[in-house]
Image (cartoon, rainbow, N blue to C red):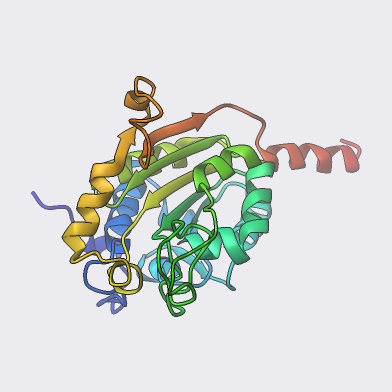
Length: 271
C-alpha cells in the first residue's frame, strides 16, 4: 500500500516550487514519515525555516509553520521553544541559510542544547538566490560567484554541530530516502539539540555548472561516496579520501536548555 502524503499537505499548496530532480521533495516526504512515526500532534508542532529553496518546505505542511528572515530560523525556533517548551519544534533549511548568514544562530542553538530538531539540506550552493557559493561548496567547484572554481575550504556541518555542542548529530543523503525518516525520527525523540544533515542535490544551479549530466548522475555520486560510520571505523584514511560518513555520528545525554531555564525562573521567584 502506498503512503498517504496528501493528509499532511496543506490544501492548495501544490505544485511545489522546486526544480525537477531537486532532492528537497525527498527530504519533505522523509520528514512527513518521521512525524507520523513519532505520532506528533500537528497542532502542537512548529516547523520553522528561514529563506531559500529548502526553507520553502514548511509552507507545504499542515502544521504550525513559521517562515522567517534569512538565517534566523534557529533564533525564531529558540523563541518558540522558550515560550512553549512542550511544543515539538523542527527547523528546516539549507546550508547557506544555516551556516552562512545563520551560522551564529546555528552554533548557539547547538551550544545551548535546546530541544529541537534541525534538518539541514546541504546541496552545496545557494540555490534560490542565484547559485552563489556557500560555506559548503566543495573546494574547486564552480558557482555563479566562483566561475573559475571555489578557493575556500568547506564547512563540515556535522563536525561543526558536534563542536558547537549539539547532542545528536547524524548525516545521510537524498539517495538514501529510508534513512532520512529513520534519522529524523531519532532526532525528534532525542531530548536536546538534534542536527540531521542531508546531503542533497541541486541539478539547476550546482549540477549544471559542475558537469553532472543528469540528476541520476548526482544521485549516483551521493550514493557512491556515502560510507556508514560503522564501516568507516574499519577503513584506512586513503580509503576514506573524498568520502563522507553517514548514520549517527554523535550522541550523548546532557541537560536540556529549557528545563535548565525553568529552574532559573523558579529560583528567581523564590520557589
